[in-house]
Amino acid sequence: MSKKTKVGVLVSGHGTNLQAIIDQKIESCEIAVVISNKPDVYALKRAQNSGIQAMVINHKDFESREEFEKKLIECLDEKGVELVVLAGFMRVLTPLFVRHYKNRIINIHPALLPSFPGVHAARQALEYGVKYSGCTVHFVDDGVDTGPIILQSVVQIDQGDTEDTLLEKIHTEEHRIFPEAVRLFCEGKIQIEGRTVKIKD
Ligand code: GRF
Image 1 (cartoon, rainbow, N blue to C red):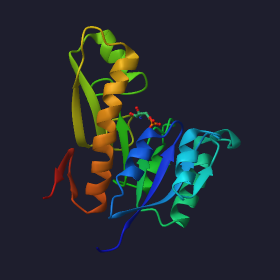
Image 2 (image 1 turned 30 degrees about the vertical axis):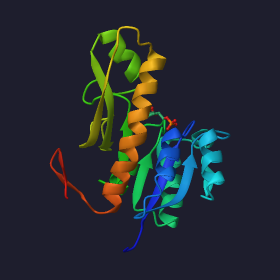
Image 3 (image 1 turned 90 degrees about the horizontal axis):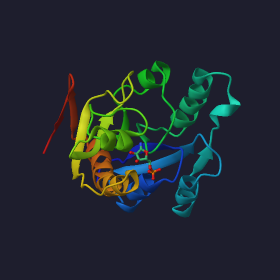
Image 4 (image 1 turned 180 degrees about the horizontal axis):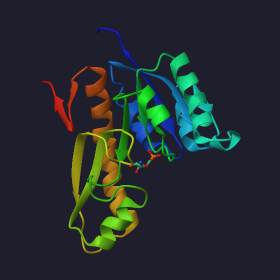
């Protein structure tokens, strides 16, 4: 196997997607660091349990988004991170960060983009009355949930679904396609052509 791609995972919460990526044991990927913007979140514990370096960079300790992001960049670059994975990272990133890692940041969103971007995507899908929703792995650009789409998976919405039951179905699919997207990136199989992502065999 050729050189592993160094991955930095940014988290803010429970970290089930981080766990899914860890559990997949992707040969081409080394998780070099996990960084949380919130202290005491369970995602940090998950990293530690797997022997991965876990750090807190609390956004509240910085005067501006840019100052916070400069610190993130410093830590990620120091670790040689080539791919930044947003696994439930609940801060919008500014162009400063996005341009530094252009086409090297991926995010998981709990809806079929471009429908229902932003927070509360599952609630909005239910309120809108769509019959199908799902999840999307996409590159991060300067907009909110607007970057080129890598993978999507569909779930059916049933009449009795609540926000919680819908999210449960979506999470199952997230845990399948997010590690898959990380693997494809680390194996160099992803090519961006304008808005379109091509996946090489
Ligand atoms: C996921 O639903 C993801 O779509 C959204 O944040 C949630 C993170 O969950 N961006 P977890 O922390 O990975 O459990």
